Length: 580
Image (cartoon, rainbow, N blue to C red; front, side):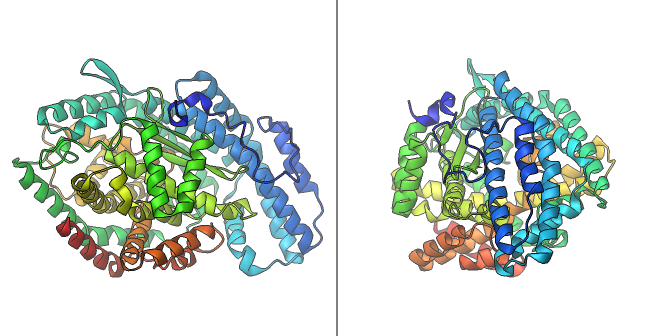
């Protein structure tokens, strides 16, 4: 049995700190609020009278933050790996309810202490400027009355995980998870695909009211949080809370408009080509993933252990050092990849702040998409490892707009080595699916971001109004080429599948911005692969220590998502589709 198959190995007790603790006692109980708050109080009470003392104070705070963050990350990992385990759910809930609120409150006091100390203890602007602007934004937004509201919001997000993780379907005589049901959409048998799609959709609709109720509770909380912070709406609040210093909501809307002009027509062409090759009158929702030539689905692996071993080979061929890093993750049980009942949906990479190690969570079932997902999350893992030497926890995490360049860029950098999984014919199929997926993600990002802008720009809206807005936005960016006849309810509730809307509000435009960066990296790699990889690794090592435009520039990329960038990239993508 490999690490990827056994959720019970996920205790992380054998992972040592990246370096010996200098401030946090070795035996400190980080699940105990009094212990944790006492450590933070020690920092709050400590006199800071010089630049050297302030830097030491920052390092000690970073060590404590990393230890506490790692404890919470482990609880979250264990809970999502088995959402039907009551003990794991209770442990995570207990931490969120008892430790997170007082830490949030005292962290604000520590931020204010830092800003006050900076007045008399000057630190180098080049080193600390990015950190300081984040701290100032957090201080401006913090309100004590929002602490319990955010706790409640976190618990609602946990409830979403529980609801969706419990979804299974009885199909062909077996109980199947939702990721397992997705495999049937790759089968050439059209009636089978339709039956699987409809069974899955019925299961999701069974929880439609419950998810709508849950989301409206979230909306109420988020509106109160924004109002308490003196913001016009939650959109303004979240933009500032997510430290989006280098672009504006208006830039996001320009992205929407440019995608509608430059990308949706190409997406429509791809669908029309698919319809012709499938020889069907119209494309239905169960026709969009299957091979249009009627070939059996790509089956790159059977078991999660095979996925791991082949991925190690791919990463080694891309860069030997990256391959060894991933192999070490496997040896340290930092992977849980197989789908199973009770596991939360989706995939993610979580950073263990004190060990400075990444963990990858997936729901692999043996598809081509699983391979791409592991390359994607592997890119995040390499990013985490590249920045591991950075002393400040805040700088070991880049802005998400560049974190996703790390992941999407790795998908493209490694794609030339996927012959490990496929023969020549299947490799060509896989690569075309990937390029089509890149075209697909850009309008889907516009869909989700525009929908979230509408939601929070229309406080007090009704369910009917939200439904109408979703359908209008969906149709604007989908190209109108899929026939949803007799599926009105399924289409109207399809946004429920996007966990970001529930758990990470306004986190999605990052994928569009980053995909444009990754495409630039891909174009650069086709011209000079060694230079592209070197720039990629150089930028990853910066972590979050520089502003977004500088991170992009370090990789040889433009931080731009206007028509000037999107138009030429879509021409290159169109040419690649023709070649494939």
